[in-house]
Amino acid sequence: MTEEKNKNISLPVMEHFYTLQGEGYHQGRAAYFIRLGGCDVGCVWCDVKESWDAEKHEKLKIENLKIKIKETAAPIVVITGGEPLLYNLDEWTHSLQQSGFRTHLETSGAHPLSGSWDWICISPKKFKTPVPENLPKANELKIIVFNKSDFDWAEKFAALVSADCKLYLQPEWEKAGEMTPLIIEYIKENPKWELSLQIHKYINVP
Image (cartoon, rainbow, N blue to C red; front, side, top):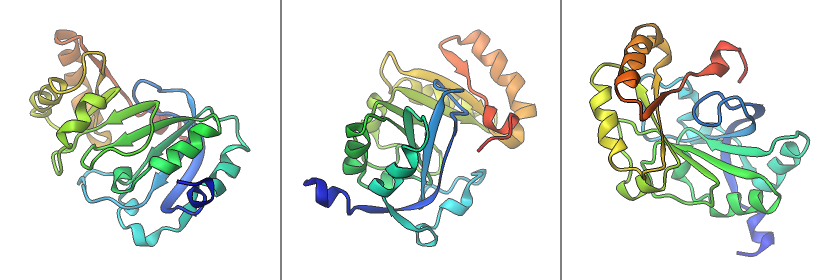
């Protein structure tokens, strides 16, 4: 695809902002987030339900977004959602990498993978499980723990990712008080897993 055509690809963007990565392996690192609108997974506990309807969000070009990103010192651009794999992200990620940014993906994995990525975080959801061929490509598997049965469910997916994939258990925010002690005990018994907390909510940043 030509560079000129690349500049004309527009996708619905709910919000974009510079902050710290709040979860998982890259927790605490500076990153620029692009949250795409549109989601067909529909988690009942989703904290960004306003992202679900793509029609409510302005379509933006990656070249315009890069102007904003370059105003910051961000080394990483995280594309999240919603569900970002509803869209073909090949040209967006190529453009970002050509400009020297690392590209990170946060996805449920429920749609075929597109894009060129330096890091892929798959967080499977019971409401629409991942496409099987996506799982071996994950650098990070993040399981949201909502109830005790989620530990067995987590192990199902841990068996499907690569041997060097980082494994995280993260309490659902509203049930963190109840689930975090259970996660701690589970990790002590199964140390291949690590704890992920949503530190951005504790330190009150986006």
